[in-house]
Every structure is written in structure tokens, then in C-alpha cells.
Amino acid sequence: MMKALFIVYNQAYGDEIVAVLESLGQRGFTRFDGVGGRGSVDGIPHLDNHAWPEYNDALIVQIEEEKLAPVLEKLRQMDAETPDLGIRAFSWNIESIL
Image 1 (cartoon, helix red, strand yellow):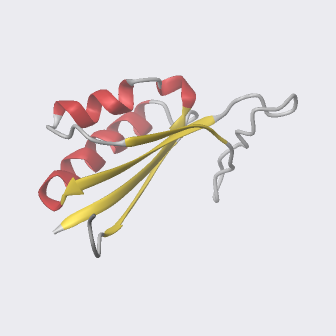
Image 2 (cartoon, one colour; image 1 turned 120 degrees about the vertical axis):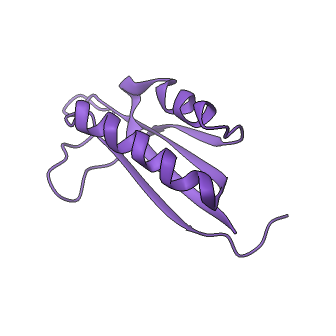
């Protein structure tokens, strides 16, 4: 079964998130640059304005189910090393593919 994986991350990670995907054999993704938001628990706002100048980028990935857990584990490791930057990832089943 294919999964959709949505990853939101501080722009400071740059291409590191894509490198994680590539290291595990995941090629395709769509990137959204300059995404604003605020963490639901303790994250600071990333709104790309004068008060909150940081911002996020996001990726959506169509990924095979067996690749999902290894990708999430690598992202957890990155987030644990630099928790102030923030990475969040959400997955769900893909019902149909065009």
C-alpha cells in the first residue's frame, strides 16, 4: 500500500530532508517553500515576518509503506539532535493514484 507523507520542517534544514529521502531510495516529492505555522505543543511561530522571521518548508511524498518507518526514524533522530528547529511528519493511506 502506498502512503502519503507530509513533512514540515524549519527552512534551516535546507536539502537535508531530501537527502534523508534519497538515502533510503525515495526519489519523488513535491516541495512547498515558505510555509508559515506554529507548533501545537511548544513550537515557536515560523511566520516569515518581522516578529517571527523564521519559516518552514514542507514536502509531500508518495511513499511505499515499507519505506515509511525508516524515513520517520531518520527524521526523529534529526529532530532529537536539533529540537529547536522542529520537524513534524504526518502520514495517511493513499486511496487512489493518477
